[in-house]
Length: 272
Image (cartoon, rainbow, N blue to C red; front, side, top):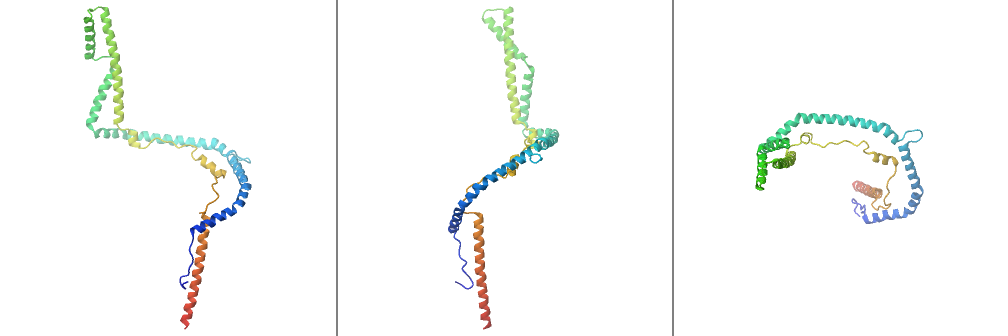
């Protein structure tokens, strides 16, 4: 062994792991006996504590009573006040900047905007016309009805006028249905191509905080109950810390002894 470099030894992970596991196995019967005796008592104490927290004890109010009568009403009032203020601010922002946002989006593609405007205007006029057939279409229906009557050798009596009226009525119903269907498609197209001022300006979906958020976690913290996993852990942090402490202490002791010997040797050599 060198005088100035003492051998402090080396650590063996396998041996330390085996020692830790064996120590836990050796103590397992005593630990099991203690757990079997005291864990039910601690569990019962935790459950009693949870019951006292929830329902109260010794004249003190429980959490459920305070929450339902005091906390929840106050939180609801604050939430309503906050939501009202937020909604007022949101509506004000949309009213102020909505027209500008819409105009900016329409200006991005003026050709498409003009086309959609023309289609929308035409479709709006058709829908507003209701059952009133355009003059050209009405004449076409009348001529077709009269041509059919003439082809069958009929004239222009009351029955012929009635048939013409029926044809006009059917054509009007069909015309109105087509206009409504076309209007819905135009509306869907506009909705898909136009900007949403709320999304463009606010940039967030509506949300509201839950009044009872975190209640379960709070109660679990009060109960004192916890899940217990395996009792064996060869890499137990406490054991590893103990090994580190012992190794460092042993190394420091050896290094200190070597330094002392070196100092004495140097003094002896210096006196010669």
